[in-house]
Length: 64
Image (cartoon, rainbow, N blue to C red; front, side, top):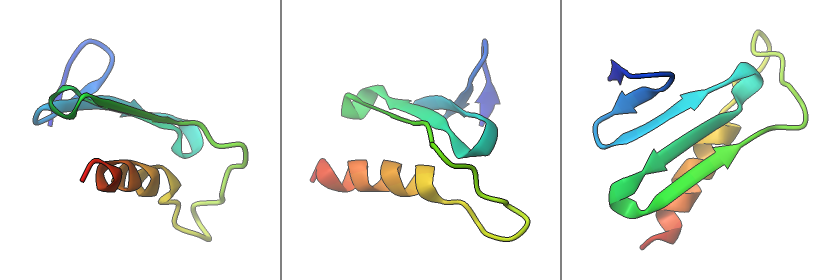
């Protein structure tokens, strides 16, 4: 991972995460961008929050 002007670069993809689990990820090679903004925050001390990553993985599954 490397840092660029305002976002992280992860191999050929780039994006950023925000407060409460919101995120955006762009993969130019797959011609796909996924953004997630939640409407309810989860207390991370009590429960793991994987909602954003689950949406990204589902989007990649839809490409095949």
